[in-house]
Length: 399
Image (cartoon, rainbow, N blue to C red; front, side, top):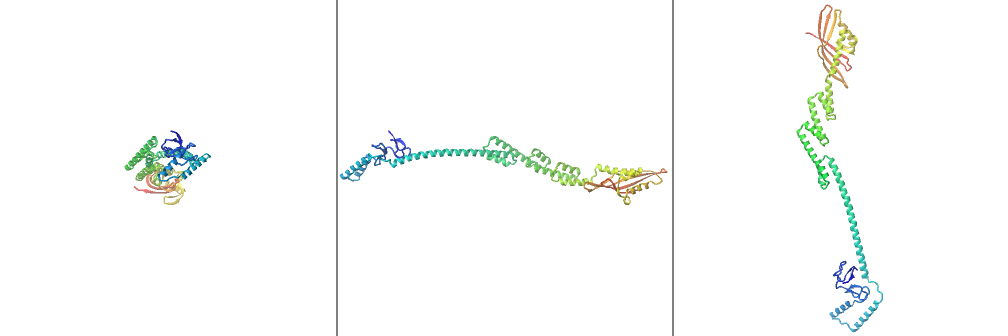
């Protein structure tokens, strides 16, 4: 066994190999070694492709073929063949150019090696590209998962948390556990909200707000409580009720209405301070008559007053009335207010009120002869926002 070059591709192979492992051409029994130059070539070729020495085996085969076909070679033809053979042998002594088939085989070998190199390089480049793409894909996927994870934990939407769990089943277990716990909390919150609404209880709604102040249902819960408190406020219809609503719901849906109702009620309500002011004005007025103190008497009289039956009376007219009460036979006089005041007020301006009052007074007159006379009168009067009496009438009560 000898190592030869494949006549077809130039690849080194055994001369006993059935076929060339590189190009697949048959080898065993199909090649011959040139007796002149030692070049190995296919035995069906007429001459060596390297030195062009005639292939004796190929000639024998040709003659055999002629004989088999009935063709007879004449002596002249044989002589011609001998001369041709001699001429070929003579030509073999001259240097010959390499055969094109050999050059092509060498080129094919180089081309095959180049193709292999290109293929290997291409595979390496493809692997690198795939690796880089895979890296960026996995990195982008991880970043996307982180974003969706943070978004799911920060959202009160059940569907968002469920979507994360559905889309990222291969996420870190810690993330899955956190989102799952968040989802369970949202589901419980939804159930608690349903229970609070169905109950129709203000207490249940308030408890829900305390438990879930950041719930998406918080605003709705506040509005429901607001409406409940307003309905209760309207039923009570008192200044305290409206004030409580305003204090509890500083941004309430009915705050403006509550303020309007409160002001209206306050316009009709007499506070203890207002009642004391009215009482002091008339107490001082009648004590001034008892003591005949003109300055104190006129201190609570307006510039003009509808006094008794006189319209637009002046403070001097009131002083004259007092002096007329003290006739020559009167030794002393005492005015007193035994009962309470009936007071009504009406608004005359922004926060300014006028007061209409009715009350009873009692007059005791002691004459110089020791006689005591008691008179009772019903007083109807008006006090302006400045605390001045602008109207007063007296009606004697006969018993």
